[in-house]
Length: 127
Ligand code: HEC
Ligand code: HEC
Ligand code: HEC
Ligand code: HEC
Image (tube, rainbow, N blue to C red; front, side):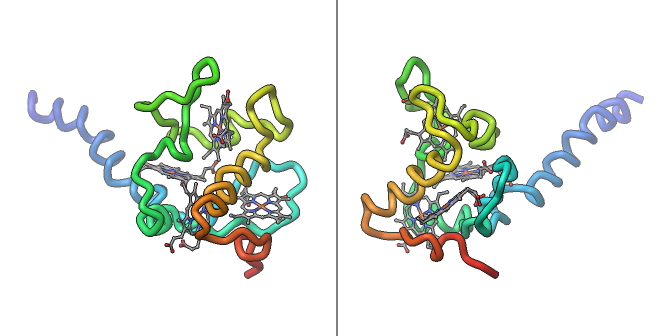
C-alpha cells in the first residue's frame, strides 16, 4: 500500500520529466512569437541550443533577463517566461516594445561581435 502510494505521488513527476524535452528549447528552430497583432515576416531562424553553443553563450540571462529597479540581476533568469510576457508591443518606459526587444537583443549582439546575421532576409527566411 505504502509503495503504491509513493508511486502514485511520483507518477506525474516522472511523466513530467519525460515529457518536458519534447517541448523544450532543444527542438527550437525558429523564434515564433505569436504575440504580434499584425505579423509581417516569416519567423526568425534560431536553433536555440546549437546557436548558443556556437556563439559560446553560457549565461541564460544574456537573453532571459530579470531587471529590478533598472538593474539586471546577475544570478537570475527568466527562461520560464516568453519575451512577450514582459514586453508589450509598445515600449513602456525603459522596457522596449516587443519587436525592438528582439532586434536589439539579436542584432545588437551580432553587430557587437561582428558575427551572425544582421540583414532582414537572413533572419526572417522565407521557406
Ligand atoms: C541568445 C539568446 C538566448 C539565450 C542565451 C538563451 N535563450 Fe532560451 N530562448 C531564447 C528565445 C528568443 C526564446 C523564445 C522566447 C519567446 O518565444 O518569447 C527562448 C526560449 C526558451 C525556452 C522556452 C522553449 C519553448 O519551446 O517554449 C526555454 C525553456 C529556454 N529558452 C531555456 C533557456 C536556457 C535554460 C538557457 C541557458 C542555458 C537559454 N534559454 C539561453 C533565447 C535565448
Ligand atoms: C521578467 C520580465 C522580462 C522578460 C521575460 C524579458 N524582459 Fe527584456 N526587459 C525587461 C525589463 C524590465 C527591461 C527594462 C530594463 C531597464 O530598466 O533598463 C527589459 C529590457 C530589455 C532590453 C533593453 C535592454 C537590454 O538588455 O538591451 C532588451 C533588448 C530586451 N529586454 C529584450 C528581451 C528579450 C529578447 C526577451 C526574451 C528572450 C526578454 N527581454 C525577456 C523585462 C523582461
Ligand atoms: C550574446 C550574443 C548573441 C545574441 C544575443 C544572439 N546571437 Fe545569434 N549569433 C551570435 C554569434 C556569435 C553567432 C555566430 C556563431 C558562429 O558561427 O561562430 C550567431 C549566429 C546566428 C545565426 C547564424 C546561424 C547559427 O545558428 O550560427 C542566426 C540565424 C542567429 N545568430 C540568430 C539569432 C537570433 C534570432 C537571436 C535573438 C533571438 C540571436 N541570434 C541572438 C551571437 C548572438
Ligand atoms: C538577427 C535576426 C534578425 C534580423 C537581422 C531582423 N530581425 Fe526582425 N525579428 C527577429 C526576431 C527574433 C523577431 C521576433 C520573432 C518572430 O519572428 O516572430 C523579429 C520580429 C520582427 C517583426 C515583428 C513580427 C512580424 O513578423 O511582423 C518585424 C516586422 C520584423 N522583425 C522585421 C524586420 C526587418 C524589416 C528587418 C531588417 C531591417 C529585420 N526584422 C531584421 C529577428 C531579426
